[in-house]
Image 1 (spheres, helix red, strand yellow):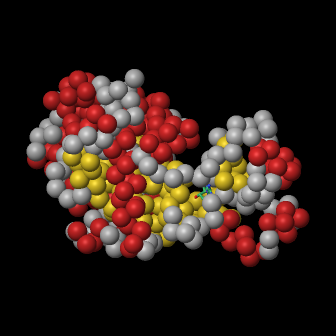
Image 2 (cartoon, rainbow, N blue to C red):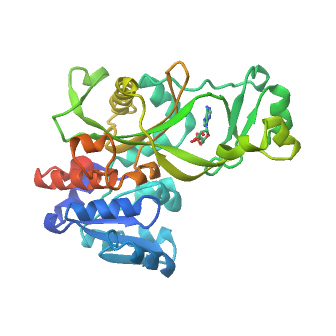
Image 3 (cartoon, rainbow, N blue to C red):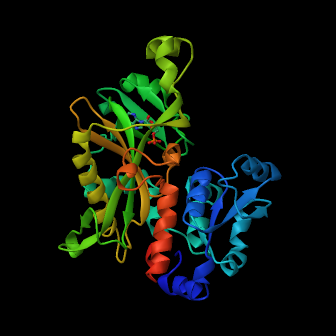
Length: 370
Ligand code: AMP
């Protein structure tokens, strides 16, 4: 499944390394990716459906793609693979691309793509994420398998829920029973009370300087690559963030209202500096475990996000991982309080382009693509 290393090498052998074009679907974090690619000197290609989408980019000349590939629907990207390869395109994936194509189509897309597409399999199920994150030493919210054992506030997440719409909170079994839709597949998690922080890391396996991730298991004693913290956000979630203004959960239920967790925007944040060493410890664990997920795993490559809640005991609980650029990095097109320390104006989008550029210079492009 997916693209094997010989196929990738074959494609790259035909690429003109002087004229690599960064291709991105025009959505999600594309302004940042396009702007960053341009800052690193790349040509850029926007992929879009609908003239309105293309026109909108006129409002941002600093990110406007050099060229466009206009489609009737996103799945046509699969048919344009040869065209994209002929034009030396490297795709930078983001959440919308994976959603528009579907994760199995994305894995099969016959175009060199930044990052490790194999890791998607692990990201795409809550059970596998838990296995990975716990192997990496992260504490996660408790899962309650039997609803009768609910003994405090819980959050119920439906498998098919898009963007947190349709999750619900319950205080006890009765409350759960009254609200649950048993036709749907769901997970019951302990509701962790605390402040949310979404930590944007970047792992560069081609670098041997900086904070080096130590391998474990079969990689014990090896340095695997460089880990950086690029930025941090908190999501605005509608309507839960403003829910308290109308009273208690009970008052709200009386008005037939349920909280929803639909992301509408992102705010930049920093955490207490004394929490950073633990943040790095968790991220290092997650990266080193990513190499052990399955036989021959290439591990994490590039940006990933740990989605956390910090309790009043100053403990992190990690409730999710995204193994790609997250839209929460969008406030940092001009750099962040963390990335600025190392190099000004280094967004995640630009960091991706920098990794591609350095890999071209060092003739190891294959190491950051899949
Ligand atoms: P998710 O779909 O897992 O990313 O969750 C969506 C949102 O639900 C998060 O951004 C949090 O606001 C909230 N959330 C998820 N899991 C928990 C939890 N275990 N405790 C408290 N809030 C949570």
